[in-house]
Image (spheres, helix red, strand yellow):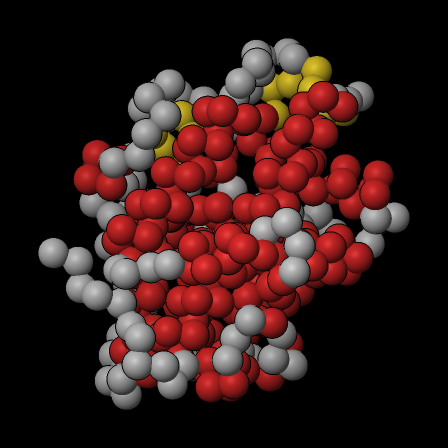
Length: 306
């Protein structure tokens, strides 16, 4: 698949500074913006000391060591000429109504190029970052970009509609109403559920929502599940598992009962909101797991798939 090229040139830092200005400006959106930020905040809180230090060193100085400040950067640059090749890496198109994910069948771009999907991207950027810890970083790769892409794509693969049906582009072409506002099914899962949760229960305060999510996985309803979330023998089997989780949720909870022109309101919101919050938590916990393994002092690594 495509490779991140170049070293840490002044031009690269200019691109990051410029795109960061776009990220924090009006109209920036993502899994949503808030969803990607919370995923990365969760991950950074769970980093061991060595991994945390490497992450700080790889980030540009102006974000003061805050990984979440640039976790939506890949959304900002995906249509820039230099990064246009990354656009297919944000999602996976699966056969309509099949409700399964098969890596060899589904992980490709619209032209059939293999590994060009979010599952392939996570494998690729994890492999690049492993070289950093081993002291053999290939100068063809930019480790800062690899970190940002990996962090973002770990959010994307956990957003169920990013592993959706081919004909409707993961719900993007299913136009509907979210309460009284026009939307589409993909956007409902990307952003509407999160922002409605913040508005209805947390006085539009993302920090309070994040604290609630963190409580649920540290000593709350998900605390006994964290060990299983983190289990990962090799990256290929793990990304396959995470993508399968997402397409199963998309079928059972995303698409179910939804037709073009539908109005989704309280019943849909109340039943889907806990699922979205859990996926954000899982994405953050698993991102931390990867970064701790590739940057940390643990001897536990990833087995080579056979």
